Image (tube, rainbow, N blue to C red; front, side, top):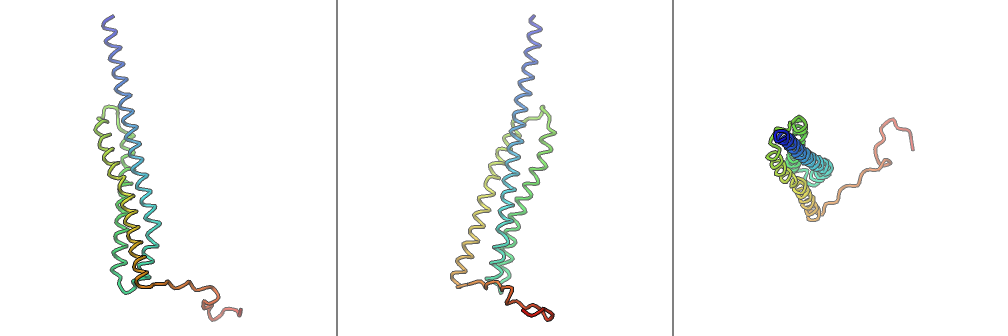
Length: 166
């Protein structure tokens, strides 16, 4: 009877250890998904804000291409960094799925908590940078008394030499 209880307790211990490893693996997978989502959110925000900022820079400072280039490079760098981290998270997803229960999921979980905490700062910093650029452009518009040209309506546009009369 004593031998049987030892075997049963060992089986129970192994089952508990496997369950704990599975829980850690699920938590790592969740943290990885949060990192990917945060990066996608950042890329989306930058994709939305970039054309407007660059258009305003180009319209306000046509004689200073370095301002346009600097804004373009900064926004492109932030976007590429966020996209690179998102790609890393997608690659980690496959590795996590393949991971076995023998892996040290506690240390992996700790590393992913640190990674998630670091990546959590990417969106607020990118948003602050975009808002700073927009506020600087707004200040420049006010100081230069810049009023953008209204778009040319269809009727005022040159219709071409072979257009029928109105």
